[in-house]
Image 1 (spheres, rainbow, N blue to C red):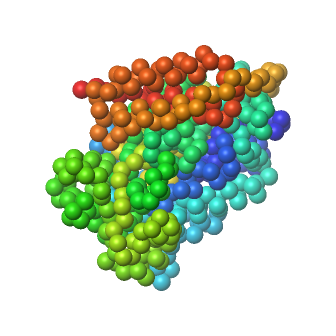
Image 2 (image 1 turned 180 degrees about the horizontal axis):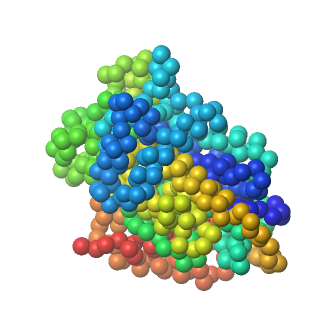
Image 3 (image 1 turned 135 degrees about the vertical axis):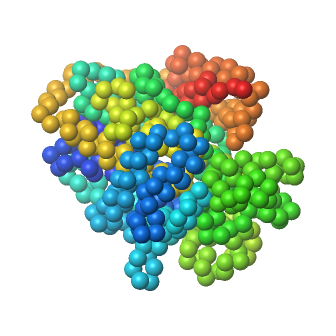
Length: 487
């Protein structure tokens, strides 16, 4: 990997790969993947991509308004305009340039569906595995591009500014290495592993947020965390829970409590199609009212043929855990899902540190406000990943980057990391900041997290992926608890 690059992209989800693919063939791009190339939240995304592709029955104004309502009008209006008006072009490019296949009706038109918070059927999808379809196509395109190099199992643990660019410190194959580039794009995904339960991939440990924070970048609203109301809650209770897509409610599923009664009418007039944060909070309030945490989605009335065709992956996953959604309700409960805040960026995905960009879930463009509208996440990765590449391409014309002498790689030897630090952080965050924060526990939680963070920073631990991820988790937890506004 020791060749000069025009840009280094850290992360291989939709934002990172789509960004890399938008550079012209004359620019050399390195994509660093912490795990395997497909180990991303993008690969797990089910519902689809929200985009106004039918202006006869929908409009940009409606999508903008739906996004603003879901975000409690704390969105950045300019960023929402960019997202909604430019997004359809990127969705079409997925199909035309990269071969992404979205479901179609018998007449060949796109079969858009409805999800919570949307006023129109505008979510295009590939069955219930849209993210996987997109990830497979973009991975293939990146591997086939002569100007893109992909490095897997490359754990970036530090960034350092140098004249005209950055040094990128990484671990690969148990050894440390240092690279240089004039531009870096952080596309590292979310922070899911900071919570006890999450729908996120195991790679989602907030590394990009930590890297930017250590460089002095502004981190905005990291406490704006979305808890998805319908994570699978049956079978073995593992840390990573698979999602029962928003589209299941969009296709008519009912939310029912422990008495098998519908209850959303007690909390919101939009019933099951209220935005995610409203539904998640309603479930928590209903659980307190009933003194019971057993909740379900019931869509069996739609019929086995429809459900197996529309939700094949969800059907198979539920069945593997002993639940036949064509015959019985699906056990669900809220868990961590998505980060709305993150590394503050402008409309071109630039951070407040020159030559450093961020796109996708780790970035805070402001499009989501306080709560993300369903299926706007893949759209955001596409739009602002592309904008990052376009801005870097414009800026780099005529530039010459002379890499500085690279420092010797760091010594990776050190003491073993004490077991259980990540779990302890998970427990603190689950106790203090799950759906409805326990403000009385926040101050003590911050003290506990800071003790772990100081220990990680001052201890001479071996430089491993586990250490890097635990340091990121502690840093993320510290930022969230410190910025959480107390009543």
